[in-house]
Length: 452
Image (cartoon, one colour):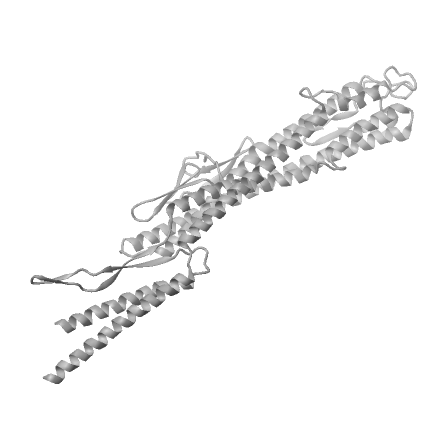
């Protein structure tokens, strides 16, 4: 009975340390896998057996294969993923907007407005000069073209944001389906009493990707299944994966559920940045641009229509611009065809250029919100630059935190080859000792047999 117990103990020990070696080998094989969490074999004593008044140990067993992971760090990484992705996306988009305006530059709208008003000032010196009249029209055309380019560029960026938002929503839905499928697999493995460590790693990777797209909240139930809400709305568990839809109402983007139609409260992730800039920022930039150009058009027309041209008889009541609408600053076609119809004179007197002077002075007059047109435009450029700079700084701060959290995560979940090789030697020697115990038990048995 004693010798058979040695055989049983040693055999069980051999199997246990073989499993421990398998786990260590699995760790070493995934040492370069950034998505892998180190696994640790926790050994435990087998249940003792009683024989009369004596209690005998029955050896060792593999108690649990522990996945080295810190849930608090995971939560902090996902929270900062949302902030970092939001700010990084904002910075990228605002960088495109800033590049579109191209300020400060000789080809910027600010320079074009200055050149336009300067052309009137130059014409006032020699109001009968045909070349100076043509110069006024050319500067007006340049101003018109630049305003149109900016407006169309903002519209194009906004259209690209719509396509971007659609793709992000599609990705969110795909990730939710993937998480639901992994939840189901993890549940099935868990109820069998097994440990789905590799599946948990796969699911964490998908959750991390999802956290970069939208603000999420993650909780885990007793069956190892995660329950996730997106934008404050339930999104997925082990049985259901909700599908979200992108809608546009009154020029504003909204992500709604396909069930009740309620919009998500987006506060983080790329989807938040895209939705906010599409719905608020770019429309505001367009409104400010429209206001500046409309004010310029109306102010010039008010003065120009009160002046007289050099035709005989002199004509008055003519607008310089046909108006401004949807990015298009329309110059009066009659003036383009006949520059002599441009009104410089206040009273039709030959050589009078009072109207031209007053139009030139509009450059420095506070005719819009108590400031000049140039100051208003400068405020718009400053606003865009300030928003971009703020997003860049926030993204840098978030990235710094993510780097620190990543180092903490790596110290816990990452595989150290040195530590694993130490474990290999430890398990190997335990395995050899167990094998030697079997050999000793066999020799004892052979001795007994030779005595019979």
